[in-house]
Amino acid sequence: MLSEGYESLSLQKIKKFEFDGVTIKIQYNPGRIHSTSAKVDEQSIADRKCFLCNENRPLEQKAIQYKKDYLIICNPFPILPEHFTIPNVNHSPQRINNSFGMMLSLSKALSKYYNVFYNGPTCGASAPDHLHFQSGTRNFFPIENELSFLKNEFGTTLTEDIGLRVTGIDDRLRKFILIEGKKDRDVQYGFETFYKVFKMISKGNEEPMMNIVSTYKEKKGWKVILYMRSKHRPDCYYKEGKEKILHSPASTDLSGICVLPREEDFDKITKDDIVKIFHEVSLGKEAFEFMKSGLERRLND
Ligand SMILES: [Zn+2]
Image (cartoon, rainbow, N blue to C red):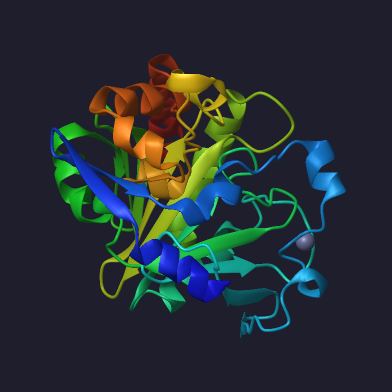
């Protein structure tokens, strides 16, 4: 499975779109078809065997244990040159509020070569019923190299003190909050505040819709990108015929690697489609203003 997955990745086709200082790469990757088209409604989830539970994983799939509760395993359907899935050892729902600290710990431990990312239960995770992170090759996502530019060009500083810097960024494609800090408790505090404010404008009982990418550098600390979502999948996902584009955006896509498992979509997708899809699934303008002012007020109290 794994060698087929990497074979598929090696045959990938790439095309590149440039926006004002933002690079979006389109990756044709047929190996991702199951993940992109995964049915994640409650009934479909209840009807299938969880592929992240130990007893259902292939016997050949080795794991590296991380701390007490996590396993690092190879993702047999890679998007990045090296791509791992990091499931919890227990079958418990995909939720970030009690596991964000673990995400920070993982991204520090893996930081020499890898980043760590998280997809919310209705934001691209194909196992919304089993808590897991993903990890992959550092600096493969275009946004990792664009952050300083995006911050200067499109950022509003919401708080800046010795330990913690929080910035709201709208680069006209995406709206996200960037948390930077050297101590994990400062970064955690930034995240908890973000979560509280986001919860106020989120519907439903599940967590606010988000994708997260975390990187860590010695001396500089963590950079955590929080993409806020308004929608799971864009309209074009559900269309038929020529109008259909099978694209289910998650952390990788919003970070500049848009994965399309169908060649016809890869061939026809345009810059305008990307703008439309990104705007559709991202938080709206008004909600983003609310997030920024709410965060600014609470963080500077
Ligand atoms: Zn499971």
